[in-house]
Amino acid sequence: MTSRERVRMALNHNEADRVPIDLGGTCVTTMITTAYNKLREQIGIQNGFARMHNFAEQLGYPEREFMKRFPFLDVVAAGTNFMKSDEDWKEFPLSDGSKCLIPKFINLEEEENRFLLKDDNDLVLAIKPKDSLYVRQTYWPWKGLTQIPDDYDIGIIYKNMWATPLPPLHLNVFNEYQYQLFIKNIKELHETTDYAISLLVGCGLFEPAIFIRGLVNLLCDLVNDKKRVKNLFDLYLENHLRFLDRVLQGVGEHVDILIFSDDMGHNDGPWVSPDTFNEIFKPRYQRMYDFVHENSNCKIFLHSCGSIMEIIPGLIDAGLDILNPVQTNARNMDPVKLKKEFGKYLTFWGGGVDTRHVLPAKTPEEVKEDVKKRIEILGKDGGFVFAAIHNIQSDCPPENIIAMLEAAYEFGFYSN
Image (cartoon, rainbow, N blue to C red):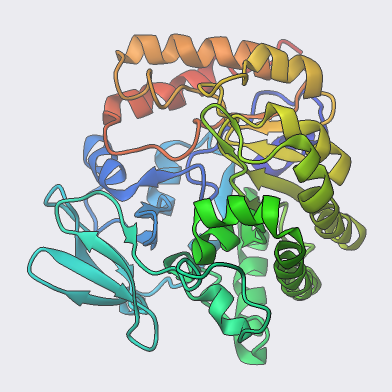
């Protein structure tokens, strides 16, 4: 059985030979680059530097050599088949003293103790202190306004650090030359590997609005100014549908999973009530999800952090196929309850190991026990792809990451 076949069986809620395994197959199931550097050293990958594809979150996709060391990995991100030449990258120092490569198109200015992330017009969008693991957003176009404007240039809604693209979204699919390159590289990945292929499309509503308005302002807007919020979301929706149409026309038959992202939860619950979700978010999600299902065989994968149990029924009604990261260490996200109530309708992609309390702090043997327990709960009857709860951070020892992967393979086989 190929990896692609195994993943497709799981997504169709059937038990394959074993639970599919993902580490680095999407932009939300990978590792911060400092953690990946430690892991590369641990397993003896010495050629070149790790590549950081996502500067805003300091994340990288594992290279093909890493995939060969763990041949039971089943998923690859479409972005790994772009920017294959070293000429497309430049060195970047990390906070622990190690180095990596970042895309040359990232516009950085180095100061004594920090890096400034700028847009094409040299507007500072974010700061990366040299001694910090993370990038800090510094510019929100509408954060200082009392309300969402009625008239604005459409470009302003994408003017924030999170709009810094990661491959392959550095290509403009509405430029014919770049569109053909986009198609060529993803088609090549599909034809030359048997991995399941994921493609980031984003297509959020809540998060993009936070990135220009600020969280507190947007939460107030959702209560006091619903009309303007809906108008803004409808503009996002129009742009998303136009983008999805172009993507699906070009590579719909070569991609298995489309990665949508909209963090609707925090540690103790969803950011909005179920009523607000069903009124404002659900119908717009449904239009996108229906469009994908009507025009391709791709599955809809939504990355939504936190405690979101209360809005999962609305996500299912909207047509969601896959939920990630399955943050079982948040309130009211018990994996037994999730599987029992929603396992017939959703594939859980994540929840495979506790990245808050277990992976960074326990022994390799304890990591393996946590993985085994979670596979027993979430893997029954298919509908589960093993992945950690969100991206692995710098405090996770490499031996624990290896133990996680080994356990996912060892305990993931079905009895049939």
